[in-house]
Length: 108
Image (cartoon, rainbow, N blue to C red; front, side, top):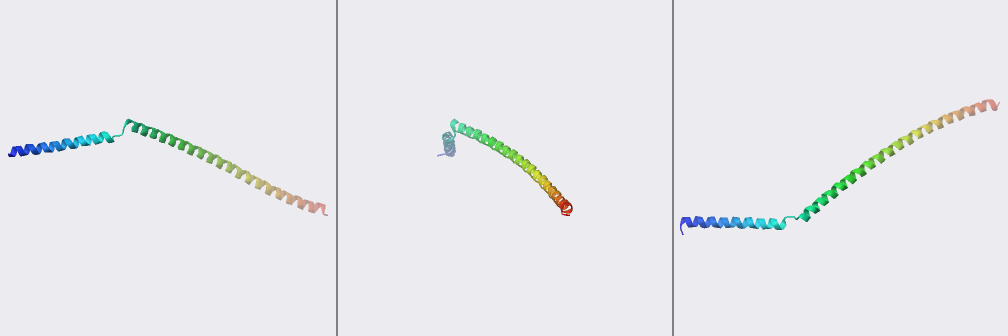
């Protein structure tokens, strides 16, 4: 076997190995590649995720609105309570004044 025959045989063997590797890679890629149904399922999953995120955002917004309304009602109730206490204190002072007046004028 001459030197040229050895180079040619080595080149053919290397080319055959390359071709075999490429064909194996192509076959494995075809067998494991996701099909159209898989892509449709991913698209449906993404759409469901976006819908769920929208529903969550809407629920969070409603919860914030309710919380703001409750805080407003609490502030209003606190204000009414403070006014009621002030009115009771004024009434208590007026009652004391009336008792003193009655004690001074009726008891004599």
